Image 1 (cartoon, rainbow, N blue to C red):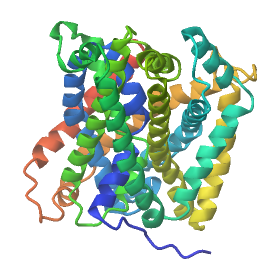
Image 2: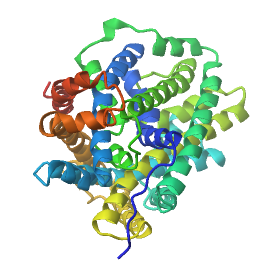
Image 3: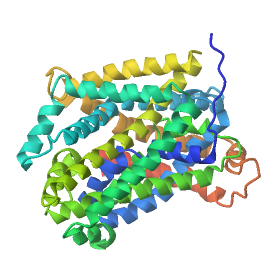
Image 4: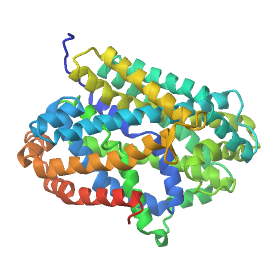
Length: 453
């Protein structure tokens, strides 16, 4: 049997960039802009920021506490901290959630790679109907989406197999700055377009008359998902933190990076969309159907600039997808490595092979194979539904109850204050949020998803 040594991040910068990379993904660059467009623009952003503070930060800190306290994979961490009671199930459910999400998230990540290639070879040119048909034909193709799914999962494997410091941390130090540079370049180009002012105002000038229960609950849900809460990622990464890591400051810094990327994504997309008269509420089809047409129209007088912006945009999406995929993959890899006592490379390869198979079936269910669906939903849609609308809220809710009501407050306080070396002035406020506010918010999110409120 292989002898296991517990890995750790090598620097404070590595902690922040790696964990921020876990949080920053397609949820920020894809989901946040269309959610903002559908929910009133600036007013949605304001509510979202409040939700990150009141829901996202406490949940993240709770996962930090569990992961660092146990210094183990997510399943073992909850098992250790609960003393082997039924609360251990939270950890196993978190690992399963991260594993299932890895499989179908890789499919969407593969789409991003396909669009990088399509931009590079000049295929993203045509009228709106062309872009719609292009996506429909590609996503239902039996071979190409699977090819790109395998490519991005193998890329993820190459990072994970090298370990925490030489793989995850080193990759994060390259990928995250590159992501920010690409994002800023596209934001500047988008905001310089004629008519971009209207899109900027949409994002920065709030219309408080747009506030309703859907806007509030949508912001709650987005804050929960965009920070990678309840997927096992945060807890697993926290197990690599040193005992001197300031958990509260780390959560705040990661939250700021996450929100900044989301807002910049809006500034990247909406000025360009408004400049060509495209509705800001285009929904999930925004990045694969609407935006190729937007870039083509917006830079019609400078086609070479439009070509470059389109290529950079899909490269940006691919990087965002990869950083999240690395953290999702690590959840299952750490679990297998420690529970089965095998080498990291063997654990990582096992996860890669199985998620490639899951991704292939999810991709085929989108049109290439008719029987891969149940009750009107494709296999891809079922994975998205079960993980996003059931597992994530349940794991998040139980984690808050576990930390707020089961774990002794002294244990939580010791981790929160690094055993008394930090002041911990917000500890009681944090406990109040975890015990009462976060569980109630998560219940509302859960019920709202099923149309019950």
